[in-house]
Length: 513
Image 1: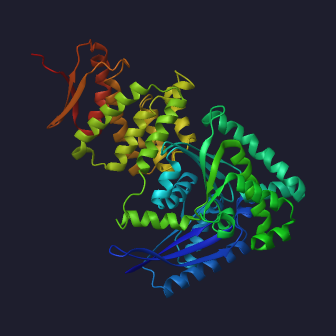
Image 2: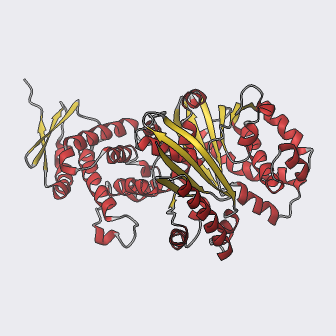
Image 3: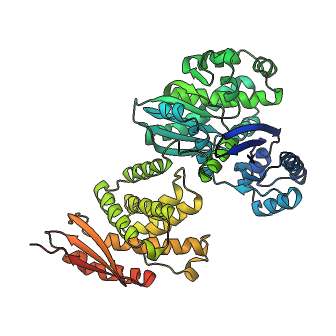
């Protein structure tokens, strides 16, 4: 039996969950510690944490470190989210925390954070799959922003981040000197202004979602109360949600805190959170709301358990990533047939060259995504296709990809259309490590050859087979059509491939009897 700790340094609260686990007995939560600390307000307003706030943060993390020692924790993972991410001196802050507390914090990008949140909910296997089977909107509310993730037929279709976190909204409302009676109308105006764009992009007119999945720090606790949700803790019909809100509107903040049995200093944040949820539900529909009450710490444990093969996969997240990419391509008028052809050829080359390139399963996925998104920039410019494709990929979140992985894809689609830049040229303008740069180089070489084999965009080949013979990659094409264009443009693409792998691609037409 081993003990693991999951730590979430959030914008309004620090949480540490402790778990016991073994391959034989599975996972069991043994303790849950929470310490209230508002980091977000300072971080969002000033981009820094004051010395006093840093002292408070280190003191609480030192307490966590003592508890971990008491429980004889063997491993831990500590994640920092938007409050730490939004500081201007993040690296200095993380080093200071490490020196004073001994705890190393990894800062998650927004998409990484929301993906871990989603994993925490997906760990409730059957309920999650049933809830997203038709259509569902995941509303993940944080201190700095909210993430909306749309599922259709069990697959993730789109995700969008909106700067509408409860702490940000609270500060905006307080600056407007808005009393509690005016707040609801102001929140509605602010939320609807951004939801109008979201619905135009992802929800055609009159199209509504079936279910709402809510990830938050406020309503989830209420939804777990059997007195509110009756026979189905965690679930509440939207009509009952409206009734609950109607009852709350008749109370002032102290009365609301007493009725909900929450600290009075949380009442305003609860109210802002609840109004946002009601506006979102009214906008997108939904017959029922599910607030499972899972936290980032549960997602951290889920990731750890997956890595160590303590649990089986509860949901195919790789399929979600691919589904998101297909819909991004569709939004920017990408050719489905062209994308599928390029994807198949590129993956064929990748698999044939496996012993040469030395890359793994994750890099294969990045190549697949690059093939799907290779021409998304043509929606903006046919001339600056590479640069526009790069900018679209860098500006579009895909849950399940890290910022670095998204950057790798962006450079691959860029260099598929523009002259390749070597590391000494690129390092002045990029954050890519040398290791990541080499991945970009190898995937670009493969995608360029795949692209050359369908340069006419006519999918001329009935079949494409690959054989690696010594220092040659023999590409056998089965086609009755004229492939003069492909042969003529292949040479330059093949030269870069040979430079990268010391393997020369050559084209052969399949012999006919």
